[in-house]
Length: 113
Length: 116
Picture 1 (tube, rainbow over the protein chains, first blue to last red):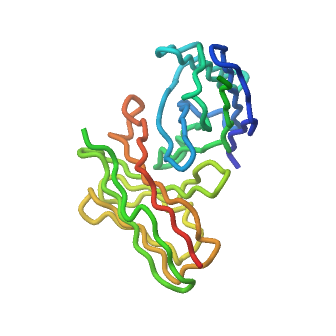
Picture 2 (tube, rainbow over the protein chains, first blue to last red; picture 1 turned 90 degrees about the vertical axis):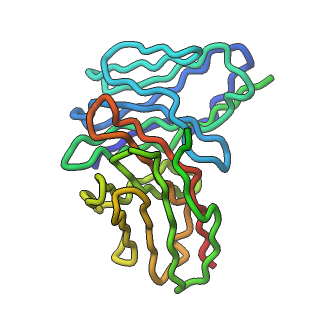
């Protein structure tokens, strides 16, 4: 069973701080990883994708991938109350004919003003 | 541009009724996925289409669930004889292609199904 694990939180950070969200995955064959943001009652919104070991930065967001440790993280700099949401980590299953995503249960982030 | 659209946004069904959920993917997107999301959980894969071909239906929970995409664009997920455990948000996602550079999946707003 291929799995993605996340701490459900809530992770509480003060406004302006760095929020660090982590996830681990079980399938060593996974090549692609994604972070989605999901506001309450809304659908997941893609915010970052990462395919290679190392860091990938986009604005206030940095995704980090370590394939040897099977570990993916998302850093949010200068956190804002509007960043309060559930963050879903997903790996992409390259097995067979599909590119289905395997999601973790999500980490709830609360940014305190 | 237009994103993935889904209808209806909300559906209440009595146990035993049949329902049909529609997904209209981003124009030109080859791949289409259906996921089911229970409260407090991440989305779980149901089925996958590449154009009109259903290449993976391994996530469909029972033979009451059926999906089609006859012309390679709009897709319909049908649930027959709904049960209370079918209550969830049904999400549709599309991606441009299967290739590594274009496999990012974009989700529609979802259909919240409540079976009473």
